[in-house]
Image 1 (cartoon, rainbow, N blue to C red):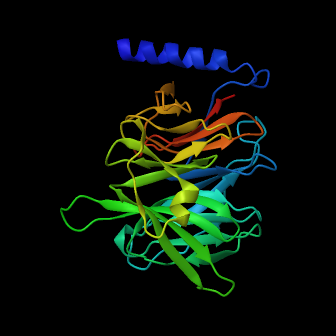
Image 2: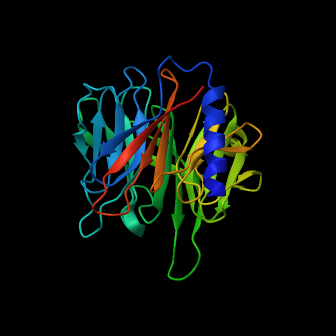
Image 3: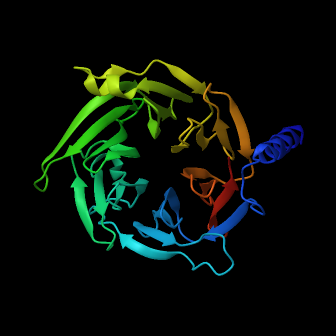
Length: 304
C-alpha cells in the first residue's frame, strides 16, 4: 500500500510539472487485441504502429485516443521463419518514411525487414541470423543499430550492439559489432553523441559514446553505467536526453540526464515498448496482457 501511495504521489508530481502539455491532455488507456511488443509513432500525423507477435505483423491506428479514431488494423505482415515461433521486436521509422522491424528469431532466424509506405515488405538484413535481436535504432536511410544476444544451453546470455549498413544491391549488407560485454541488451536510444543500452540481464542502462564506438578498430566493452534499474526493456528518448523504459514488473520510468529515475505509471500488466511523440508531447507505452481473458493496451501519457 505504501509503495502504491508513493508511486501515485510521484505520478501526480510528474503530471503537475508538465506545464507545456497541451490543454485538456490526460493519460489514456487504449485497448489493443493481440500480443504487442514494439511501438513507433509517425511524426507527420501521429499515427501509431505496433508489432504484434500473434499475427507476426504490424498493426496501426491514426489519431490514437480520439473518440472517432479508427480501430487498429493490420498494416503489414512480416514473413515468418518456417518451423519457428512468431515474434517481432523493435520497430522504427527511417528518414524516407519506411518502417524497419526486427524478427527476434529465437536463435536461428533473426532478420530485419523494411516496410515501405505502400506496406510492401522486403528483407533488409538476415546477417548473423543466430543472434536474437531486440533493440533497433535507425541512424539514417541505410544504417541502423541492432542489439542482440546469443544463448547456448544453460550458459548465461551474451550480447552486444552492432551497426548494420545496407548496400545498393539486395542482400549487400555488412554487420559490424561496436559494443560487447553485455548480457541481454534490449533497448537502444540516442541523445546527442551518446548511445544508451538497457541490459535486462544486468539490470542496468549503459552509456557509450556512439561516434567513438563507430570509429574504434574493435568493439568497445560496455562499462559506463548510466542507471541501475530492475528489468529494463525497449527504450525511447526525447531530444533533450530524457529516457523512458520499463522499470520493475509493472512500471515505466523517466530517467533524467543524470540517470535519476521517476516512476510515471506503475499499474501496467507487462510493459514492453515505448515511443516518444515529440510533436504532440506524449509517450506511448505498450502494456502486454499476461492473461488470455484480458486485452493488451497502449498507455498514452503526457510529457514535457
